[in-house]
Length: 195
Image (cartoon, rainbow, N blue to C red):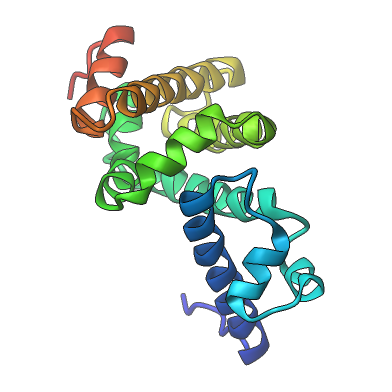
């Protein structure tokens, strides 16, 4: 099936959103989330505050967009896992892209620490987990032939709790051990990661 063509206007809009996102992350890492203003993000991108608000309601929304996109990628990774694979192992493997992306970028440790420790971002963080759990539960229900929704949500929530536990340890250890190793350890504590 052919992908729908994206018009010039939409491509331009996506490019500006991406540029704003990259600039915001750079400023968040350099100055901290609280100290970074919408005006600074807009100015560093060559836009006005008003133009910024055409793309995002506030600076929190820059991170919310990334969370939404990453949630879709994680769910797609889970959906692409082999059909006969045990669900718990498939959930662990669907985090590989996220783990790789976080591990490859030096600023990820600072951003993860900021997400976990900034009260203003706590609501976004909780919303992210609820959104990701719902996406993963949808895929799990399909993979398992329609188990009770509560079981699929519980499995997804447990996997995400393992991921968060690993990220918290990764931040507290200041990247001393690989994030992937910590995710394995956290998820193995809940149930063996049998392939």
